[in-house]
Image: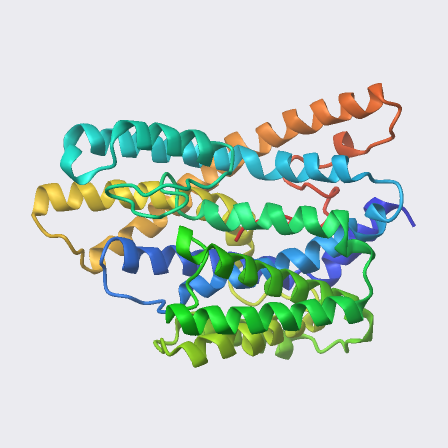
Length: 386
């Protein structure tokens, strides 16, 4: 069986992951409309979608690259493929965020970071690196130009650690590391009074604990995939219900949130793997296709809306009308995916192809669909949509 055929069959088997990824991306958008614009909150724990993305990433990368990393694929090739997949949206998001930050600095300098901080943050964030100093307006936020990039930074870190070392480890070792990560996460969540960790300098350790536990959980579920039963549509429905409940129920107690992360979200992923290729929520597959662009681009648009709304209405908080931004952002994400992200990935893959052919390495990137980084009709969810 060829690698492309294997990946196609895998996607046929695990197709519900696309729907869950799309739903999780939508929940993150709803969460940020409530927390960043001040609209009524409809997804109280929506930030936990990031932890679910980390779990999806562990499962999908193990499916797409696990055997190849222990065989013909080098660490450098894997690293470049991941950067080629992630960086186009990162760069576009930083460009949008920098444009907003400079506009805000020009219009309201007393409520903005100074110009050197903005430019320095843009340079670092554009390279997917965190800002390490305090900003007068953004404080210790490590990715002030485009907040969600903090999770993509940790995604790259754990991806490289996995490819360099974890890919050859036994499930027992992965389970031990997952337990240690969960213990660290519990302690840090208790210390900070929240699970919403990783986006600021003082909580960076919490971000590492989150990505470690999530990614390792995905790897463990993948290792057990062949022993899981096939449960069909009922399991798919329950998986979606559990995911939405974990992200949306208005319970902020730290113990509850940790339980959702440690138990409910892994259970939802297991049920999704057991359910196979199911279509449960209309439009969710479309959301899965554009989910990375939704996640990577929505915050600058929300910031612009918030600033314009405050300027013209005089209100610092928005009402339910702010949720009208949802179809706007989904439309922007669809356009960006179709006319920017896919063409950019195609160009980068061709460049990688040429590089490896020059070194006598057989690669198959050029044969892949521009919409799909792991093979024609293969695992479309092989992204870092966290």
